[in-house]
Image (cartoon, rainbow, N blue to C red):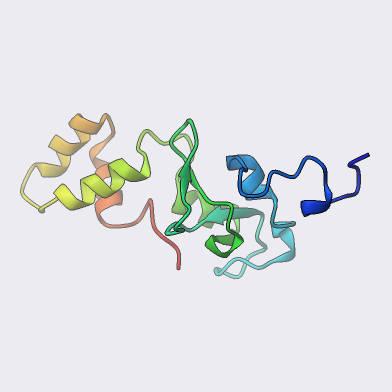
Length: 133
């Protein structure tokens, strides 16, 4: 029986062939850690940049490598990567590369990407979709 066995001792272990949710839950209880803001951490958050980075079917980035995760409180996790977002990391990076600061550009980008101009403002000013290091 696989109960009580963890990691490679568990017969269901998939090694690096792990999905998004399993990758986020395989590092232990985040509650045992403190968020950089000083509050109790509740979630593991992928911080990006892993050489083995993957995308799930919903476009969410993750990695099987625990070195690229950080324990965060819900507030910091939500600010890092907004939930139910219309944008993906690829679109965010594209917006940041394209943005020049020209008058009316945020409104035009907002229309093109189907989000509000406030969202574009938050993206280009790194208030949302931030990389944590």
